[in-house]
Amino acid sequence: MNKDNLFVALVFYGTVCLSKLRFFFLKLGLSKLTNQLRRENKILSDTNENLESELNTLLGLLAIPSVRNMIFAVADALISGQPIPVSSGGGGGNSDIRPSLGWSQTG
Image (cartoon, rainbow, N blue to C red; front, side, top):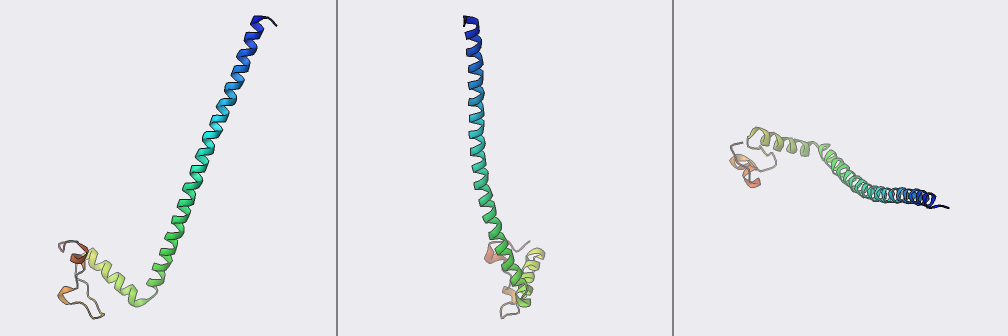
């Protein structure tokens, strides 16, 4: 084998090795990315399950008329800035819960 053929063979071999190295590092990068995406998917799935559980709890509470009325009374009062009429013994001029939440009474 003469020098020119040897040089061509070495260049070709080097190119093949570099291609294999690029593929290896690309595969390694994709593997890390895949693992990261799997972890994030697990976190999102767990969060989704927790939110679904909370939603089911809220829907269960909304099925109880007295609780539903109280929740909507609080929501209406917070939206409109009016005191909350509480039918379960509280109420009067002190039924506005906004000060206890640290919110202003001016709306």
